Image 1 (cartoon, rainbow, N blue to C red):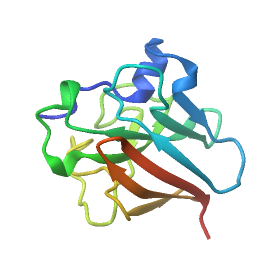
Image 2: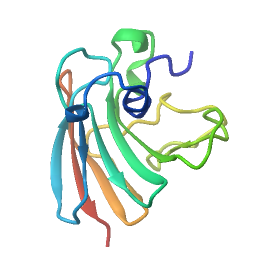
Image 3: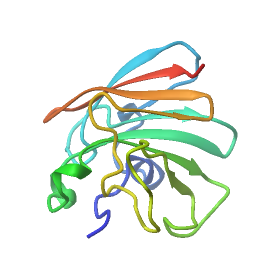
Amino acid sequence: YGNPELTVWNRFVLGVGSDSQLHCKTDSATSTHLVAPVAWPGERVEGVVIPLSTSKAIVIESRRRTGYDALLGKESEGALVYEVDTSKSGNYDDGPFTVIAPSRVTLKKGDFTINTPLRQGESVVHSGWKITNVESGEFGDVVRVEKAD
């Protein structure tokens, strides 16, 4: 049972929701973001986008066992971090999405949300950025974004 709920990036590309549901991080200052679960309806921030180039970006979203993700296990809840490369097309295995998983995870082909989101206190470093899940709960996730050392 994989990833049935659309990602916040797919929702953006499809025009589902509004631009205000994404924070675009364009400076190098440390910032903190409250990210609501992607499956929740309404006008909330559901993702953070960090542009890396004209075709690549880091995306952070909150996944919870709700909506089409209702059957996912508790281990699949948290702040999902992935890179999008719009110069690629295809499916999740060789397409535009690359999961940025915490060190506790050994990624297997096809893994996307299964056990890959950051739990509270976990961090990942990717392309010069450090993303930390500061707080996690029913409300979603609070993530800190900062330049990596």
